[in-house]
Structures are given as structure tokens and as C-alpha cells.
Length: 351
Image (cartoon, rainbow, N blue to C red; front, side):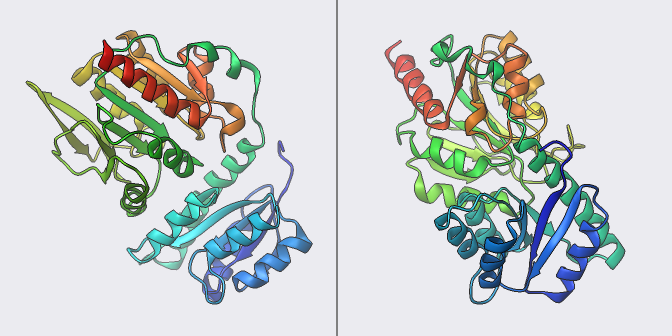
């Protein structure tokens, strides 16, 4: 897609937010608003005629909400990136999370309790990042992604934790991988999914409903135990610390890394200290290179690294960085990552 203009349809039942979105989008280079819809049913019809590249889609709307729009577009076979626009509330988060699990490209938070000019700047910053990710999603490099496929089971069976890095397009991939892991999976799973606060709690709750493993949003000083999945809370860094034979979570309010908080690189540094090389790291879909330095350090200690294939990524950024650095022991689709983890766990038990 390069710098081709992105054609955008704005969908929101609030006149205030329609006006704000139009103002913000008008200041983003390479973006053209081709239409405005006030509710979901109207949006579905306008997509059919306007064929936009991107929808900014309100989550909660009368008649047909954001999830209903996503399902209607999927039924019609429409290929359109959808950016959900949701308020950071306990009420809005579950719906936005479900939308991402239904295939929404990403989510931005509606600014709350800010002065009008601050709200516009907040929204502008978020949308610039998301539109760059949309562009990146159309630039999938196929080259190195098939080289190490024969080594998908990793280099060693001795591991005591699985760590997963995930960003844009990650929630449905996480659901596919975690739902394939058995309830008796023998090690803990730590996940950094780049999402705003509130949404990570909702994601953990939703994944817990469909997985055999217990899935929780990590809190400070939780004991890290086999058979449990810990998702980093949005807005803080997740790390771990070992004291004798007990590993506990530590949440840090440190500056963002690569613009991300939580950051997988921050988690990875603590994994080196707590587990040395007894780690399997999986780097999934997402923009940027968060996870590269973590994988470099972990690999130097003897850890195994898996990366998601280009053709299954919403954005082939994070896995591409790891692959091109020669750090990936296996490059696999989501179901292949799950099968590799199960196989490695089986060999670990047998060994």
C-alpha cells in the first residue's frame, strides 16, 4: 500500500465524537474520510458502496453494535481493516475485547475527562500509530519466514516457562494458541499483549472462559505457577523475580520501551535473571521490534524462540525482527506454535 491514501469511513452514534474524529483524521497525512455513518446498519450499507480501506468503528451503538458490524462484514466477505473506538470503562472493555477476538484490527481509547484540545491530541496520537500499522499490514515480507520451519520443536526440552509477545492482531492468535494447550500444561505462561489498561483484564477474563488453563491478569507479587497464564496489565511493565525456589510477578511503573508499556523486552530481561535459558519465547503478530532484545538475551542463555509466520500475521513486524536477526528456532502459524509447545512439554516430561 506504500503511501497510498487510506480511505476511511467513520462510524459513531455520538455527534461529538464524529466531529472530533473528522477533525483528527483531517490532520493525518495520507488519510481521506470518504463517509460518515451514525449507526451500525448504515455503516454496513456504506461499506458495500464506498469500499473503504479502514473503518473507525464505535463499540456501543443502538440497533447494530460494533460486533454486529464486524460479523455482518465478515458474512459479506468484506476485507476492511477495522479500528474500534471504545471508552476505557468496565462496561465498554468486554465488548471491545470481543470485537478484537472477532477480528477487529485494533482498538483506540476514547479520551475521557480531558479538555477538548487535549482529547483531540490524545486521539490523534493513537490514530497515527494505528494507521501506520494498517499500512504495515499490507507490506508482508515472505523471504526469511520459511527458512527454519524444520526446527519447530525448539533446540532443547529443558524449559520452565513460556513467554509470549503479542501486539496488533494478537487476541485471536492468543485464543487459538492457549485454547489448544491442555489443562495439565506443566509450566506457567507469561504474556505481554500491547493493549490499553482495562482491556487486558477483559481479555484475560474472556480467554479464561475458553481455555483449559487458568488465565488471569497479573497483579503484583503473584506466585508464578505451572498451568496458569499471566497477562501483563496495560499501562505497566510485567517482570518476574525469583527468591530461592519461588518466582513472583513484579509490576513496574517504569517508562515505556519502544513506546510500549507493557514491553516484552522488559519482561525478557527479568526472565534471564529468574530462569536463565530455561525459557521458550514466542513472538507473535505486531508492529515494531518489541521482543527482539529479549529474545537475543534469552537465546544467549540457551532458550528456544518461536516466531509467527508472515502470512498469518495482521502485522509482520515483531516476528520479522526476530527472524531476520537469526534468533528463531521455528517459524510457525498459530496452530503450529501450539503444537510445538505441547510437543516440547511432552518431551520435557519424558526427559
